[in-house]
Every structure is written in C-alpha cells, then in structure tokens.
Image (cartoon, rainbow, N blue to C red; front, side):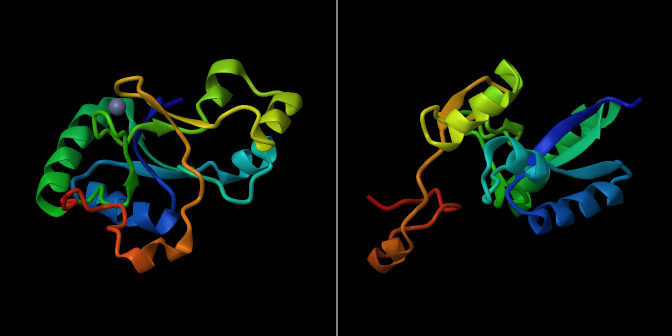
Length: 154
Ligand SMILES: [Zn+2]
C-alpha cells in the first residue's frame, strides 16, 4: 500500500480538479479523495466542509509541495483552497476532533448540536481555529470583500 499525504484541501471537487491536472502535467500522480460521506455519517451535516482532499504519494510529496508553492505564487492555484490562517498551508483537517479523539455516535451527536466546537486543524503547523458560523448572504450588500482577497482596505 502506498502511503498518501494530503497536499491541499478544498470545499468543492471542481476546485481540486485543475490542480490534479496540473500535477499530472508535471508527472505527479494524485487523487481526489472526497470525505463528505464520512462527514455526513459522523456529524450529521449536509454541508460538509474541507472534505475534498488532493492527495499525493509520500515520495512525491515534497516535490508536489514545491510546485504548489510556485504555482500559487504565480497563478494563485490555491485561491479556492481551504488554508491555514497562520501559515497558509492547505493541509487541513476538519473537524479536528474526529482524528484525535476517535468517533463515537454520541460524540458526533454532541458536535452536531453545537456543544462541541468544530475546529479546523493545520497539519503543517498544528494551528487550530474554529469553524465560523455561516456568513449572512446580505453581507455583500455592504460591499465587504469576500474571502480570497488579502488587500483589505482600511
Ligand atoms: Zn498552519
């Protein structure tokens, strides 16, 4: 069995596809792993998050990560990825506790009712941060910049 490592994390399959193609062009094999079914089962959510994982073989990981860094700097290929607010890595686990604590139905139930916070976890720097409540759709009316823009005017 090959050992696979998460290279990047996305909320949508379609956002991960172009990157998979890019890697293929660089002769790096990758696969898109969809975790939404597991999230639905464990956390009873119909809105899985950070559930699309682009994974590469361990032996290719370092190379792939370098390419990714270059592509992101020049073309912003990680624009739509889920990223760590601390280090910018896209190797994100969510919800964090599922891997740390192990999953039991009772625990998942607590999480689904909001008693336990769902937390993102960065595999790169171990930073954790809370899931934000769903943004209100009318936020756009105020012309606030949506995510993806770092040049917030002050
Ligand atoms: Zn990080």
